[in-house]
Image 1 (cartoon, rainbow, N blue to C red):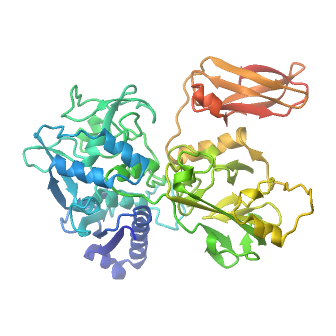
Image 2: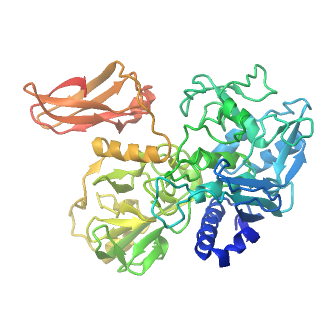
Image 3: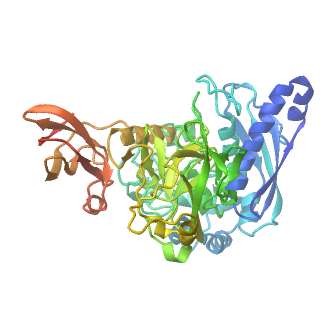
Amino acid sequence: MGLTINAEYDSSVTSLQTSNPSLYTEYTTAVQDAVKYWEQEILNPITVTITFGWGEVPTTGNALNSTAQGLGESSYGLIPVTYSQMLSALQATDVTSAVQKAAVATLPTSDPTNGTGEFWISTSEGAALGLDATTVNGGDVGLNSSVTYNWPGQTTSFASHDPVGALEHEISEILGREAYGGQNVLQNGSMDYTPLDLFRYTAATGSVASPAAPGSAVAARDEPFSAGYNASAQSYFSYNGTTVTLPFDSPTNVAAGADVADWAPTVEGDSFGYNYNGVTSPVSATDLQAMNVLGYALACYLGGTRILTDRGEVPVEQLRIGDLVMTVSGKEKPIKWIGARCYDGRFVARNRKVLPILIRAGALADNVPTRDLLVSPHHALYLEGVLIEAKDLVNDASIVQVETVERVDYFHVELFSHDVIFAEGTQAETFIDNDSRAMFQNVEDYFTLYPEPPGKGNVSRSFAPRREDGFEIEVARRVIAARAGLAEEAASPGELRGWIEEVTADALSGWAQDAGNPDAPVCLHILADGCVIGRVLANGFRVDLKKAGLGNGRHAFGSKRRRASIFLCQG
């Protein structure tokens, strides 16, 4: 059992049952969606009661009924703690993930403020850290009643805001995702701090106008107690004290009243970024990292991946041979076999070929996947008319590779021909036998059911082309990046470098990189007898290229062409 949130409503909401029943249903549904999300993600066995209001913040009575105000507001109880208490609690709690272990390792061993600051945690975080009872009154959340929203189930409107993302944001503040940055927030005459403040850094590059990219090197911890502190510097969240992730809001905006813990305006499509019209704003992977370092253990994946069948969505482990599953063509087809393989976490540590790929809810399209989806690295999704393996879509934000697991159980559904079915609403391939059936622990069951003639080749025909590089995969990556708020404007082209490694009568391969845009794909023209006969996109991943320092390693290409003499030229 993990987090339980008891959602209660004040009279501003309950009165809607008679005055505006449809709005009452829309709002309470959005609340339940936001509550369900956090209950699925957080494993700490605590119970938190939150009271929700409409157009006001319950208890405090603060009105939220003007477009000049934000989308939402929270109010929560606080516990004063010494730095030593907070450090000990985090050291004891932050042990469930690589992110937590790296975060704890960055914390100063003694009070970095030398007694000039006061540290605070929310009552909910106190419960998670073992500094308060496991059942607490977390606080209150209000949603602005003067704003137009895209309520759950409605078609997205470019003139409306995402209420679930806003509610997820406010709930996480009650859970402790808040920062004070040394300001006298509580009007107690001292400099106030929270645990999140200890993970604020400046970057070695970038500026307020042009923040450093995720993965850039940190410069220093960015707090008033740090040597060389500059109140005008751009700051970033970093859980490891080595590289930055997303930028916090600018000092100018914070001075004008913006939340110290929110992301900069450049971060779109994020629950803690700016909530723009017509943009879905889910909790991002970086938001979850922040919750993780605050002491919350996160589910590494959701058990029971749901497959669409003729009787609705069914957890994959409950499927049986002969069950009918829905395919992308709209036809129901029977299951031929289900392969199973499982691994203890100790034996797959750091094994990128086995560790699951986590695709966050909504990463691919609105409500796709419908829930967080985990698949094996080589499991392909059907995107842009081709099959793309999950490992080739990792962006370290909305699609990530899980770093550590206690146990991994994979189930592979096989039909009588390779096809595409729906897993958590996502179009995903069924098992294709490319002479790989032996990897399953129940392989003997298959040969008992389907004896194979000696020497028979076990290679199936693919439902669609499989891509490791090329234009389709780049389109898919850019769509996913835009949804995750990662899309960046390319810099001016730089020096083009590369190597043709193979040229034969029917194939060519190699790599190419634009030095001015080291992580961007490069389009190459293919010439035969001086005429352009095609193009290839150098965006395939190769380990050797990454190890050689060539950006993200996605610079390989391979294509079949006749009589090809190749010239490297940008197009």
